[in-house]
Structure formats: C-alpha cells, structure tokens
Image (cartoon, rainbow, N blue to C red):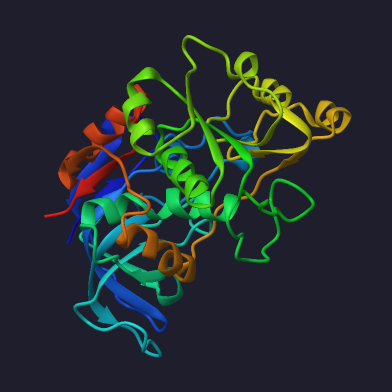
Length: 334
C-alpha cells in the first residue's frame, strides 16, 4: 500500500509518501480501506518529536512510523471474533488514542487496522472527508462537555473529569473557530446553553450560522474585559496566560482546559471558587455512534479548512503550521 511515513523527527518536509506493508486484521480488529484521514495537533507534535515536552516524556519510537488517528473509510476485512462490522461497511474512527500517541496510529495510509471497539458506522448524511475530520474533535468536545464515557486514570489531575449541566447556562468557548472549538460551540448550543464564541474575525460569519449569542474577536477585544459571571469557560487554545480566563467566571463556575500544560492558576482558582478540570480524549466507537447521530441529522457540522491528497501530507502539515485553522484539515486518499 501507499502511506506517508516518518523516518526521523522534523518539520513538514520530513514526511515521505512511499510504499509500506499493508496491515492485517488481527483478532478483534477491522481492516479499513481509508478514504480520508484528518489532521490533529498530536500529529504535528509527534512529527516534531514532542519537543515542547520535558526530555523524559519525549517518545523513542521505532522508525519508520505512520501518523494519523482520524480516519473514514470502508471495511476491507474483519478479524476473528468481530461480528459487529462486515466487509463494505462505511466506518469512521479515532484509532488507538492515546495508546499510540507516541508511536503513531497509522492513519495516513491506504489501509489501517482498527480495534473493533473504536469503530462506528459513518453517519450516512456526511461524506468521508467530513467524517475523517470529526473523530478527535468530536470526541474531545463530547468527553469534556457531555459524557466522559470511561473510567481510565486521568494523566493530568488526581480526580476524574466531570462535565457540568449546560442547559440555560452561559458558556464561553475560547478558540471557537478551531477543530475542537467549532464542535464545542455546536454541542453547547444543542444542550441549550447561551454561547459566547471567542475567535478571530474571519470566524464571525460561521459563528452566526451556528447561532451563538455573542461573538468576540480576540484580536480586538479581550474576553476578560467583555464577559463576567459565565458558568463555564471551555478553552480549546491553551498556551500562555490561561489564568486570565478565571476572571470571566462566577464563583462556582468551571474552567475546562483542553491543553492544561503551563496553567499556573490553581491557587487563584481556589481563591475565586472556580473549578478547573481537564482530561485526555480517548477512542470510543460507542460515543462516535451516539454523537454521529448529530452529524447525520445536521445538528452538528464539521467545518473543513482545506483538503490535500495523501501524497501532499507535507503541504497539509505546512498549512497547519501557519495557524488560523478554521475547522479541520483533511487528507483525501485515492
């Protein structure tokens, strides 16, 4: 088969489109003929060798490896003990995450083997491009906002993350135009929240289409100067100065951090009476089935920033490096 492989860590130009062994469906697995693969931040973090992490946390994988967790495609074979899928089924999945976060989940390829429990039938109402853009973003927003769905230990905190009721609440989505953020906006609206979206001006029209109650262009206005007494802030951005978001919340409110690394406001949060929580998204075919109904019915839409053919994966990563991504970047597999 053809695949995009990594033989060393580095920039986008390190990605090679080349021949690779075709995987087999082992017991409990399904072999999927990939039609499209979505890009996500862990892809470029791993490509770069996770240089932002402390040295002791960085991966030591066996090269070559294949990036890519999010796929949509057609079942090509089923392994022993799999009776939930059949050859020809259209499916989508987030593959082996976070188990393969340091070694690659093999999605940038013509074929990938997927544990049956991580697969779901592709929503019939969307194509493979949008389905491939959905899994990690959809599961992240779902597990933060709707249902955690597992009891695995939380690598970021000593307690399990718990979503909070959203109906009738004021919810601020920071990074509302990005892959996770634009899904979170729609889920919060679906749950009956009053939604304040924070993103760049180019996302204003999209946010209006999603029915947000207020839009803030972060380049001209600081959210902490515009909003007070929110019930929840969902931060899909991370980076420097996350602590400022604490002052947007009312006492008893919650700050959910998709990327908590570098957050230094726990003492301030306790003083203000704000609950801070995070979690790590995990693969779940069951949740993709449940949330997939919203995709099928058009209640949640997957925004597509750009589409590249598989052999132009390096260009797709270069696009990601430019930032200001609106929705998802997807690789189309011939």
